[in-house]
Image (cartoon, rainbow, N blue to C red; front, side, top):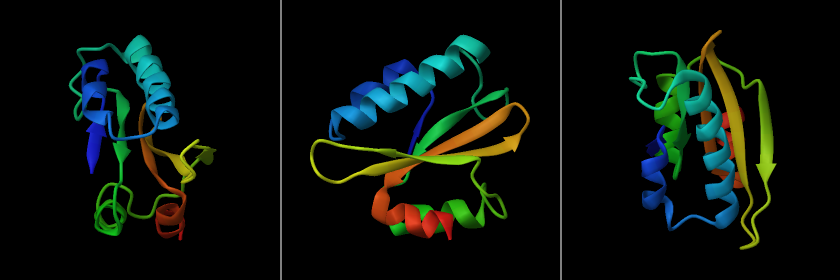
Length: 112
């Protein structure tokens, strides 16, 4: 599982498709603009993006931070490489959210 909350972390995302990188960059830009680039991501307002790469990541999320939560929305990220991904926004409070990005296949487990 990858936790993304700062522009400098995009170098770590080179293995992901261009569409995933662009989508996450847009969200991080919005969070940084509204809550600051230097925020303490776990203690301050705003939130972050989690890229769930496997079923274990999904299970950990569902048993921990996302327990009992339903996403506000889920969008499909259509990727040119053929495997579509989704982004699901979970509000933990009025000013703190986690956006979970995962494959369309794994999102079925996330949303059940």
